[in-house]
Image (cartoon, rainbow, N blue to C red; front, top):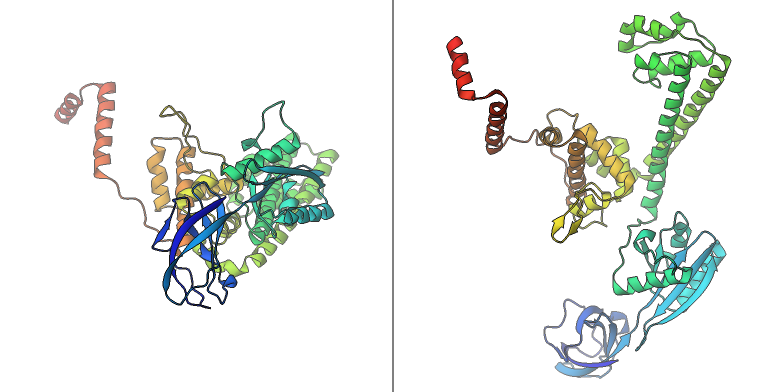
Length: 492
């Protein structure tokens, strides 16, 4: 493909011209427009100029002017030759990779396919194979955890894209490994690929730590239910009196049981704080039958909790050490109602230190899955159910929202109370999580501090409409309100 155009520019012999904007005067046959930078490293003493151009069809072309000219403004004829893209798609599996390389040509694109293993040496061979073919971009599916070693081996050599397998699934009965890889690379070429967000190495390590800490907390909760089951099996109704059996008082009582001490006075004596006022209830709750089997199981569960707590403490230390450079950001986040140190670390790990991957607060809320969704057909939105986003971040934002709505005299609590009259409490908390996600984005992008505005001011118009609605409801139930008020006044 050859295209001619006319470019006006000023160039002295041996001069390097920095790029500021496309030339003001660009004439040609209408097939191209300047979008690239002057290649300063290829400046020649004869005044030659090189620049990249893209055609409306999306083809990237290299424009080269080799004509030497005087040190004056002049206009020259430039020939453009097409620079074809070379892309690759990888269908990832546990033991093998199906690789398809697509090379654009004048006519139909050319495809070349090859299989590789999933070991480190095979991944190095795959990277060398792709570099040999001049591949610039690679797309792959997020198959379980098997895509991670492939991504880590190729991310320093190519521009990578990751997509969800369900969004690129082939038709049933016409699905093979190489067809899947070919479909991936074709969708990447056409721009019809919905890629996933993969952070760089440092936030990935943060995620690994914070998500493991969250999983260990969940396992601690599972063991808590198992301990409660053992106590119920023995007839001990202590969980109805002690709010948290893993708290200070409950844990001390469990330690005595593990030692075989079932003396009521000793167990009740471990009560602390306000629980001491419930001595009679505790004595009644600790009446049951204790067996050797129950003691063995309880000892195992208590050891599990001790191990989990030690692991969580080690991970907490590692997280604080890894995020020591971002203490100011965590301090700004902790000013938000409901956000403590653990929540701030989770937000920092999931979103990144600067939230640079998200251009707007709405985009962050959509990626997290805490905004209303759309299911529109024929102009009708059939569902506003929220999309499935980052499940760790969505869960964290909901926990922050529930903590924020319990902070008195705050803006988020007023929003929750206002919405709870129209929707269920879970929906109101979901809306608060949506607002918190937007606040987090603005704090990071605008580098500002959170300022508590207090409860939202009541809208007089809304109050009048609410009063009229209540009057109509009362009249529908009790009859004429005016007559009832007159009767009440007369009797008084």
